[in-house]
Length: 169
Image (cartoon, rainbow, N blue to C red):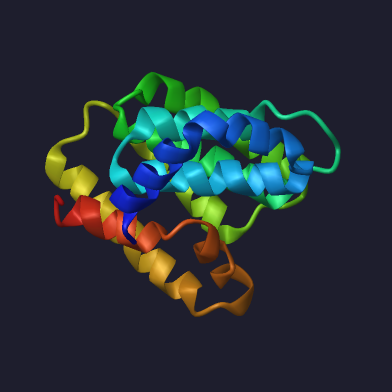
């Protein structure tokens, strides 16, 4: 949870990181990119989070972890939401839905997030948006009890993100 310290370490290592990354296998690179994106997301630097997520989405190869790829797309959507890039969200929601459906890896966790993001209209009143965040949080808490669905919360702690939006912190 110490995102500042994590980002500080990544940035301190950045000069030698490229050489290190090239020595990693594709799987390890994807994990490193995703964890780095999560650090930047947690710190609130959504542009850098998107930078690292795009490294995953643009990676070539059949041996990529499709689960990580799917969650990278979800985190990308949420990062764009945080940057108020609402017009991009509608496109990426459709693209992500197609990707997950094609891979037959659509979980309830992902469906709920995609529906939620698709429903966010720029004209919504603050109270309506807050109510949607609260409803999504309640539905996510139910999924936490499902052993099959709860695995998704390892990739992204959406409940903490929702709490931050609901409590405006």
